[in-house]
Amino acid sequence: MNTTAEGRTAIRESRFGHLTVGAIMETHVQSATKDIKAEMLASYMMEGFGSVPIVDSDNKLVGIVSEFDLLAALRKGKKLEDVTAGDILTESPVSVTKDTDMMTLVDVLQNNHLIRVPVLDNVGKLIGIVARRDLLRGYLQSSGC
Image (cartoon, rainbow, N blue to C red):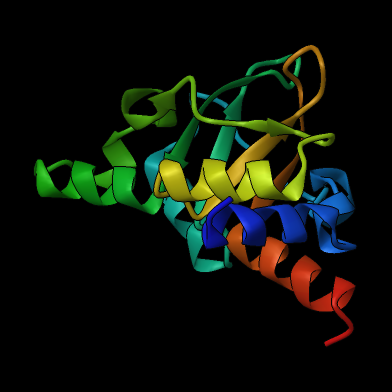
């Protein structure tokens, strides 16, 4: 076994490795629907939300709008007050469940170059969001730092 594999195994077997997304996720999520104006999403992002999950009337995830998506619209010369979430959202975003383990979450975030991902229940409804900082906080708290 190489050092990397040994390290991953040690982390999986640690207190941190036994945590799941449900233990570290944020449950108070600012979400929106497809018809919301991008300008409003930008204001949400100024309040600390780096991306906003877009849901349907049943709270099922249909997409996500990130700061990157807003910047892309501006780059195309669009005014955010003229654009809706439905115009610029990323469909079928990467997501996890509350039962996802920490090392899988690390892989999801790293492999997809993401800062945060929505957390869904078993029928695709939005129940939370988890960010890299939540994961790092969970690590520090579980290791007694």
